Image 1 (cartoon, rainbow over the protein chains, first blue to last red):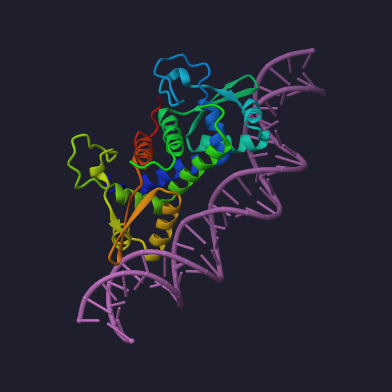
Image 2 (cartoon, rainbow over the protein chains, first blue to last red):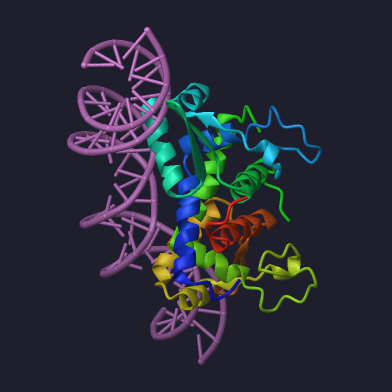
Length: 121
Length: 121
DNA sequence: ATATTATATGAATGTTCGTTCATATTTGCA
DNA sequence: TGCAAATATGAACGAACATTCATATAATAT
């Protein structure tokens, strides 16, 4: 992974920066919720199956993570602009879901790193 | 991955925030350089073998990424404080290397996400 | 001891970012 | 047409952060 182009680094920076906020992490974790997933491979929330593509509307997310509607909407826009989530409109509601498996993997790796604490390689 | 504790989210935020900076990304990518790695599993720079644990001293990193010594030292401290790199002293030099495989995985996932561009799941 | 090399640190600066509050926009329905 | 629900947006404020410059510390060798 040497000679990575500057534009690539900038995109990586953007991706990680977007993910590195408590509010946005709470939102993404809410969208990672695997309550209804029934696939066998599913463990620790980092399931790569489409079954795990939970989608939730703005107000539900706000309620779930205990944040204001305005804040959640603002941060969802940040996530959307950075391509971490996708949207689907239905009547007056807008349903958000994680964009792809890389986002789930990113959350999974970060989660596992934190969980394993101070252990080394 | 529901009901993630707030302290866990804060730690994830810290990890991602630390990783989400161009200078620090350049530093970490320099430490991910797999030029000398000879293991078979090694591909795309996200090798999990210890062979890939490249270590480099501050000035070499500064030269390689084209940044000032002061900046690199500052950012290495940030990386060290957040536990993304480890150090080894030898005479007057301090050798830095990535902390563990989670950091390599994190870089790899971010890299792949950027590389795959606009493709979806 | 002194000079030299390597690294770390502190202060200062400009910028970016998260959050709140108030308000606007959009869509469905009576 | 008008009301209500859901979401989006703009301004403003304070806090956090990356970088630079100058300087300090640490370790080695002559």
